Image (tube, rainbow, N blue to C red; front, side, top):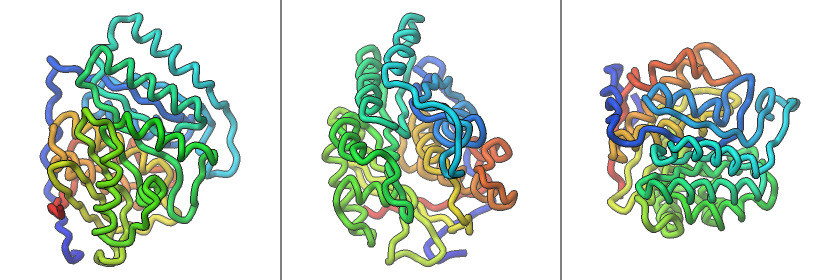
Length: 312
C-alpha cells in the first residue's frame, strides 16, 4: 500500500437511487466515435448506468479517436447544437434537464453554441448545473486543439461553468501558473474558481495530478470548493500509452455522482473508485480502448474505496 493512500477491496457504497421527483436528464455535448470510447462514447454510458437519461449532442462523428493517426467522419457545424436543442425544447422536456456536460469543442463557434445551450437550459431550470471539461491538451502532447480554442474557452465557457474538470496541463494553461506542488495546485484552482459562474458551487476538479511532493507511483485528483479542498490518491497503473477517453469518463462520473449526492467528497470518492476499477480492468485486458462495457459495474458498485483527505 502506498504511503498516504488507503485502498480497500470492500465495495464502496452504491450510488444513490435517483429521486424521480427532481430532474434526472442531462444534456451532453461532446465528440462521438463509432469505434472505441472517447467524448460522448465515454461519458453517456456511465451516466446512464447511474440512472440518468442522457440527451447526447455530438460535435463530431468520427470512425475512431484521432490518436490512431487516421480516421474518417465529419465535424458538425455549431448551428446543429441550437437546432437539436430546438427539437428537444419542442417536446416540452427541457425543464427536466438537471445539467449540461461539455467536452471537446472543435471550433470557436462550438464554444459559443455550448454556452448558449447552457443559457437556454438555465432559463427553464435555474437550478441546472454546467460541468465543463476544458479539453485542450495534456502533459507530453501539449495543446492538441485549434490554437484559438484555449482563449475562447477561458473567455466564454469558464464564466458559465459551475464545475470545471481540467487536467494538470489544462489547469496550468488556463491560469498561466506552474503546478508542481500541492500548494501551487491549490492556488491555481482557487484562481480559476474566481472566474467561474458566480451563481453556482464553483467546483474545480483537477485530474491526473502528479506533483513532486507526493508519494511516487501515485496519481491524484484534487477537488477545490468554497468550503475547502480534498485530495484523493490512487495507485498509478502502468498504462502506456495513457488511454484516450479517461478524462471524459472522469468528468461524467464526478458530475453524475455530485448531482446524486450533492456532496463533493462523496462524488470524489465514488468517481475515483469507479475510475480506478475501469482502468484496472483496461490494464488487465491490455486493450488500447478503455474497457467501458466490461467494467460497467464499477460505475455503480466500485470494487475499491480510496480515502479522501481534506487539504484546504
